[in-house]
Every structure is written in C-alpha cells, then in structure tokens.
Length: 365
Image (cartoon, rainbow, N blue to C red; front, top):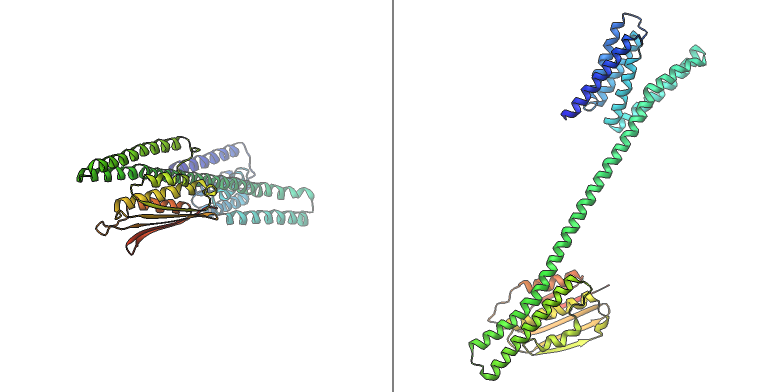
C-alpha cells in the first residue's frame, strides 16, 4: 500500500513538473493571466492521487480540470496529464467504467468532427476532432488492453497455483496410499506367520505333547519362520522392482499346507485369467482369513471356496468360532476391507450361527 502511494505521488509530481516546464517555455494560449493555467494543472495532477482508490472520482476531477483549462487557455500540459488520468481509470477501475469512457470519447470525437464540418466548413477543422481522439480514445484503448493482459496473467498465476496445489494433494495421496499398502503387506507377511509361530510355540510350552507332538509343533514353527522370511524378501524385492510377481492364487495349495489347521479348499474357474492386482488381493484375503481362523477359531475344519468368474473373483471362507474369544475388528479385517475397496469390490466378515464367515467380491474391468 505504501509503495502504491509513493508511486502515485511521484507520478503526480512528475506531471506537475513537466507541466510547469511547458508553461515556462510558452506551450499555451492563455486568454487571461497565464498563471491561472497552473490551477487546472494542479487539479489534474491531484486527480492522479485517486487513480487506484477512486478511479471514477479521478476521471471526474480530471475532466473538470481539462474543461477549466480549455476555458482559460487552452494549454498543452493539462490535456497530456489527462491522458494519464484516463489510462489509469481504465487500468484500475471497473470494466464498466472503461466501456463508458470509451463510448463517451468516441461519441465526443464524432460529434466534434460533425460540428467542425457543419459550422466551420473546413476540412482542416477536423484536426480538432483528431486531437480529441488522441487525447481520449488512445489512452482508454491502451489502458483497456493492458488491463486485459494483466487479468490474463493473474488468471494464469491462479491456474498454476491451483495445479500446484492439486499436484501436491495427489502426491500426498499417493504417499498415503503407498504407506497404507506397505502397512497391509507388512501385516500380511509378518503378523500371519508370527501368529502361527506364537500359537504353536505356546502349545508346545503349555502342554506335554510328547516327542511326536513337539516335533510337529517345531516343524510348523520352522516352516512359518522360513516362509515369513521368504515372503519378506519377496516383498522387499517387489518394492524395489514393481514388475516382480507377488503371491497369487496359484500358491493356495502351499498356503493351505502350512495353515496349521485343516482346510478344505475348493477353487473353481481358471486362475490364469485373473488380473494381477485382484489375484494378489485374493491371496492376501484368504491368507488373513486362515490366520484369523487359527487365532480365533475352534480348531475345526475351515472351508475356503474360490470362484473365478467373468471379470471377478468371489471368495467365501467359513471357520468354526470359539465363543470364549471375543471377536474384534483388528488391523487384519481393516486391511482386507481396504484391499477390496481399492479394487471397487466388497468384503463382509462376521459371525453366522456357530461359524465365522468372510465373503469377498473382487471385480476388475
């Protein structure tokens, strides 16, 4: 604000100094004492102080000053300052003001030309109309043109800022989605295998299983530990190289074999036609469901039905429910629902009579 006022003062002072120089050099035709011509010049220069805050008042004051100059003189200084008044009014005022000034200046120039031809009847009198057009129409058109480009530049800056904000939002969203994906993968890789290891280790420590039972428990612990490490390496490799193929439905037999509980697996349809993202998500959902059955189930048989239909995979998993263990929506269920939602599918999980049922529908285009 202070910088704008300083510019206004400098502009008004420069106009007043230039006008005074013109008076000193005799650039006027005063009908009275030439010193009176300083009055409209000072008023017109003072109007420039209103060019930003009150463009309409700036024009009205400047027009009155020019009218006074014509009556007293005329001179050359005040009309030249008036061109700056019109330019600034179009640049800083409303578009409606610029249109009104342009219409008034064009009409005034035409009327002046007609009057000169009718009254004076001399073509050389048209010079007055041309002079009026130069003083009014030209600065108005110039100010309007500059304002148009200024508005376009401002719109371009706003558009660029909006694009930058959207890009930042997209980047933040991508980072959040990547973090959520990594969290799901870490949960599936680490929590599932460690849960199996913990359960079998607890069983081995809390009861006398005998040599065969202890050996079987240690075998399951070793298999889950080795498999967990292998999947951890596979996940790290996938993060380094997205083209690496993650676990999919073809590995279900291996998953069932090391589930730690009896599982009846029924796969229908061709798993070769399943889209990669759906294939991986279906595997992880089945893996998490079997882990939950091991942790919260009654130890009975689990049935897993997988149907690869047209453009979708339907999953239904039923397991016995241990009534003494409260069911709760942990990070595993949240991760399964997120996987289904990311693919535009659905997943429901909850008790049904004496069983716990997980149903998922995973489509792809």
